Amino acid sequence: MISKPHAAILCSPGMGHLIPVIELAKRLVNHHNVTVTIFVVQSNTSKVESELLKAATSQKFCDIIELPLPEISGLLHPDASVVTKLSVMMREIRPAFRSAILAKDSPRPTILIVDLFGTESLPIGDELGVPKYVYIASNAWFLALTVYVPILDKEVEGEYVDQIEPLRIPGCSLVQPEEVCDPMLNRADQQYLEYVRIGGEMPRSDGILLNIWKDLQPKILDAFKDESLLGGVLKVPVYPIGPLTRAVQSPGPTGLRDGHLFNWLDKQPSESVIFVSLGSAGTLSYEQMTEMAWGLELSQQRFIWVVRPPTSKCADAAFFTLGQGDDDPSSYLPEGFLTRTREIGLVVPIWAPQVDILSHPSIGGFFSHCGWNSTLESIINGVPMIVWPLYAEQRMNATLLSDELGVALRSKVPPWKGVVEREEIKRMVRKIMVEEDGFAIRGKVNELKLSAAKALSQGGSSYNALSEVASKTK
Image (tube, rainbow, N blue to C red; front, side):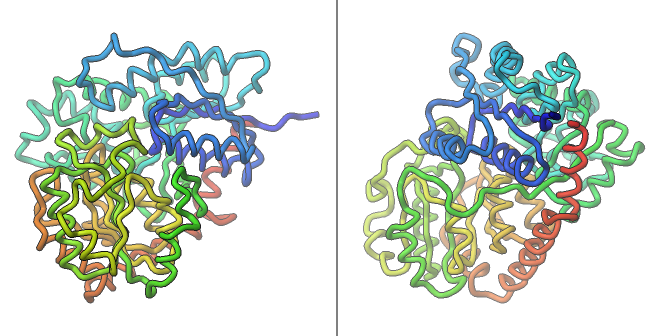
């Protein structure tokens, strides 16, 4: 009897990594006859992440092995960035991952897939004699910057953010210095060295899986095939296999799916509610939260706002603490806000079932941090965005969504430069929800929605790309 091909997938901690890995596993199992084992390093601090793992385990579509959290406190500065922490964590987990993947009772992998922070484990694929891939749960522009950063490291003098001219990547749009991803903000920081290392290791794989579809970014995907452009840097194929996103009926610890939130949503007119959620680690300063509250109130538009306590720390400080915090918004929202807006809005502490909300017909806009998972969830539901980038590659995402794809608005003053005032927030909300410009944006996002569905359907570009990868496991 011939056994099925088997994929071993290594996943970093964090919802932003776990969600697309679980969805990739589902596609391989349900559409391409590949069995899967996910090896995940759980952070042990995220309630929603734990719930997601429990749900995936109960569905039994794949095996999930949790690797022990390595002790890394002695290897890091107390103020180390999330990128540095994840890089060190994934480096230290290699022996445990290797032991688990080679254990006698484990299925023999016929393909190895690692995520962005797992590239140091690619040699395990060579040891096993199987194809090895990197799964980038982001877009082609970010991938281009990542694989090109070892070249920029040699060519650019001084800090990237201090450059007068934009950064040039062959075959891509210019990258404005102020919009580089977080690891490039300070070249003396360890996270920059880790990012350059990751960019240099990706070409050692047998291919890159990318969570987009062919028609979303055809120009950059063509550049990866051209030896005179990015193909000369990344000499392995790029497979656009997305958009891979969560299905409706998301698991969650708050039991909101059948509760007051959806009862309220069911009573609202079609496309009349804006959903405000800044991601699993998205936090605002007290001053910015006050302006956000007043902007929503002044817009006179219906809203659902997922709030987290304000912070003075950097935006990624909450990365490992999703689902924790003060669940009494009245202690930090403007006095009287909850009373004055109770007829038009709902304030939800800490967490809400985002996919379920975005798929509801009453939702007409998404005020988003534009993390790539959230971006795809918005697009596949035909929901236009107001982008509010906070950290990671989100500044580039915001430019892509607003300037190139035309499916989003962004503020005149970027959120990372200063406080966006209430009148600007009011303007954006009204523009996306009730003004003519908003209807044009809605039309563009609906075109992408149809394009994405076509790509994932049998015979579509993303379906065929993942089929090609799956065929190499036999």
